[in-house]
Length: 69
Image (cartoon, rainbow, N blue to C red):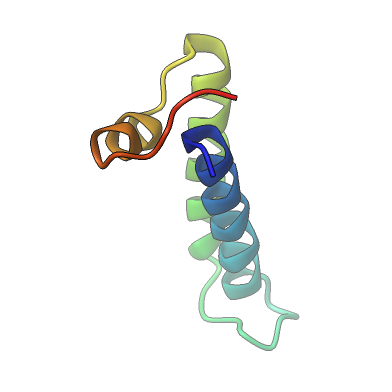
């Protein structure tokens, strides 16, 4: 997998996990504060869409994962 695919898989996983932990009807519910983490991930995705820069993608490239499409 390339860096852009890994970033999207991790972001999607974080969003789903934080929703499961933050929504009161969920069997995994812990606290509504987990929804703040959902917003944080969403804002980072939005920021990277406009600026074309993502910290996680930069770190993955330095770890040796292949960049690009």
